[in-house]
Length: 493
Image (cartoon, rainbow, N blue to C red):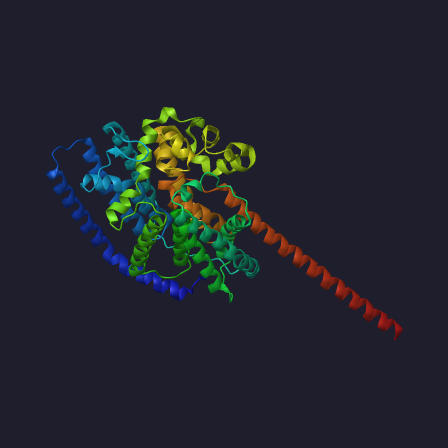
């Protein structure tokens, strides 16, 4: 995955130009097809109210936002991938409801009730403002093709290669053991969230290995162990999908695709399609493997991932029941929760998932689950969160627009910086994953892993500089002795 030559990059650019030639007609035809489908769907409905019109508007807005993102930023840009996740976790419920494939009007997870039109309209307007802001931010950017131009760092590669090879096997074993446990006991997966602060040797290896991955990639490896290390990383990602949550494997895999493309490699539409099919099969197998309800029907499987939409409705309807809301600053939980968990209020996070846990946590997921289903919360169950919802709870519709603008602006800037400096790429590794998964999670990355990655990076830098200084002092001392002996010899002569 090293940088390609300028000739390769130019060839990739020419290929992109050919794709762009057909892209605009494809966008026009897609919009026409969607408008015709919307017209047919509206004609077949008995009643058409504000909810239905907003659903139709969202379909058109989303399609054109995706086209704008792909056209200007590319298929594998963080914002483009975030929009794919936006459909999977949030918008698919709206689309399926509008075209009659399923209903978004009922909460069926943990709470069973009919969602009011008022709540639905709030959610739909929230999504519209979010997509309009994304479209606006994209329109400000010129068409770009960012390529990583970081030189190989032999020292960083040498140390991180050793770390990958040493930590990789026990880290993979940890997830394999978890996978076996999940297969044998149906409740083992949810129970793993009750005490997720394990300090066993294998768990520590997993944490260290996760922190080392961005360092190895930032070294721009090209040594003889490169293929072996990348294979270990890929196997770890796959095992983490089966032995952890699906997102722990899928999101790092998406970063590897981004990294592959940004280092000057070309990814064809066929390869992207193959990855989508493989990901669907893998994610469905993961759910089936744990003994949970799964389906090979694409609509049913996607619909089962729409818990974030139900969670949004539950959070709005039961907002007054959330314990210790902390000014609705849930969007900083990625930064604050690790500090609360490991430094400030460790006891609150180690005594089980109860009132103290939910009160101390900044996570919207924890607070909503405790408010609507405390027994399920105690068993380790959860919804996940949603960045759009967290921005709305913070400052209403204005918060959605302002916070999304700041968030996307920071994301675009960080991506540009990451392609020129190793330390920036290390940070962007974690930021990228947070952005892509933001429709189902809080917007900021886990502060703990960022600190751990940079602690290892600084340790490697310190060891290298100290070793270089010792080596320089040794050579200086040796050359001084040689000079002294030479002068003594001349004096004797």
